[in-house]
Length: 77
Image (cartoon, rainbow, N blue to C red; front, top):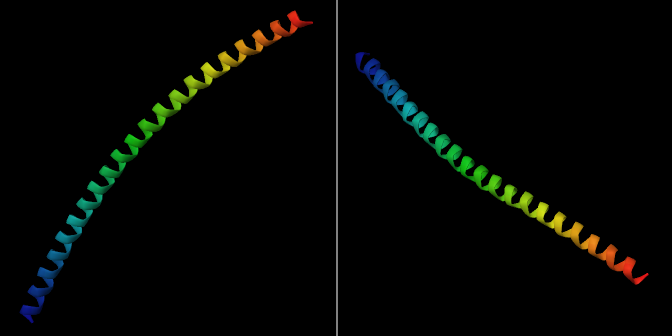
């Protein structure tokens, strides 16, 4: 019976160590995933900022062209 008890204790200790290693691996995977997410978020923010700047430029150009067209139409009439 003593052999069974020590085998069970060894198995439990090994299982606990395995669980700790798996937990550590999960934590490292989560940290890596968070870093990848943060990198993607930074890239998205940069693209969004560029798109907003381009939108302002296009609105300014559209307004200018519209004004020029109105002036030209008035001259024709």
